[in-house]
Amino acid sequence: MRLGMHTYSLYHHGVAEDWAGFELPWERQMTLFEMMDYIKTLGLEGLHLDAKALDRMDPAYFEQVRQYAQDRDLYLEFNFALKSGNYDAAVQFDIQEGVTIAHGIGADITKVGMNLKRPRPVAAGKFHPEMMTQLENVVQKVTAALDMVEKTGMKLALENHTDAFSEEVLWVLDRIDHPLVGACIDTVNGIHVTENPITAVENLAPRAFTNHFRDNKIVITPWGLKFTGAAVGEGDLDMKRAWELIRQNPDMNRINIELDLDCPLESMEAAMAFERAALERSVAYCRDVLEIC
Figure 1 (cartoon, rainbow, N blue to C red):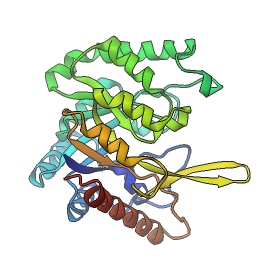
Figure 2 (cartoon, rainbow, N blue to C red):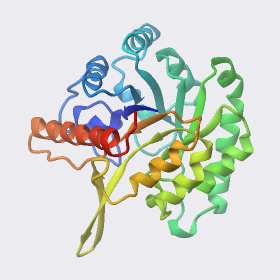
Figure 3 (cartoon, one colour):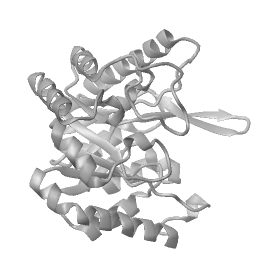
């Protein structure tokens, strides 16, 4: 099992998708090549990255990225979402576009976010008629791209993002029914649709190619609760159980640490130091406690 990192772990360095309407109040502080050198110092072995991590978007640059990663024995996985009016448009592509970028940089797995729009109440919306129309649309888009997927040998991994129950992801996979189309497990995201996160891992682990290995903390407040990012092993999710489930799948040979930290924004230097320290603790937990090696 190889241990890598989702580039969102260094969001405050300016190398990942803007999410939930938040924009970083300072300029990017790290190139992709600098990031690859940095994770090598931590003993990490790969990157799960989106288009915001790329410094340019042209074939010559993609080849530089591919060669740089290969020379350092780093695996690369590309992360994009289907085009929609939601979230960060800079990381949204048609499947053919996303596969082209992924193949160009030497990635062998491409995570696809379905970008669904759920009706409320979310808790009662599993397989809602509005969702079925959207899920069928995803099936059609993926099916239309299968020739290209087969030619490149790329694996597509559909994520249980903050907009999908794990059973809905499985429904899409069953409809497509192709060996190069599987799942991407996010160990936290189930909670966003009121699904037990471990239930989502149990459902998706046998069908997954990759993962976002993420922990969150539950903070009780007078007005409810705050579900906030934490270093892996320092939150309230059962990361040991998640690891046990993931490791049972012989097709999944990587763990991608992801952090989504609420960093102090008064100082850029303090925010980046906070992020790096949490990443280092996450790596230590995965290596020393979970014994991922």
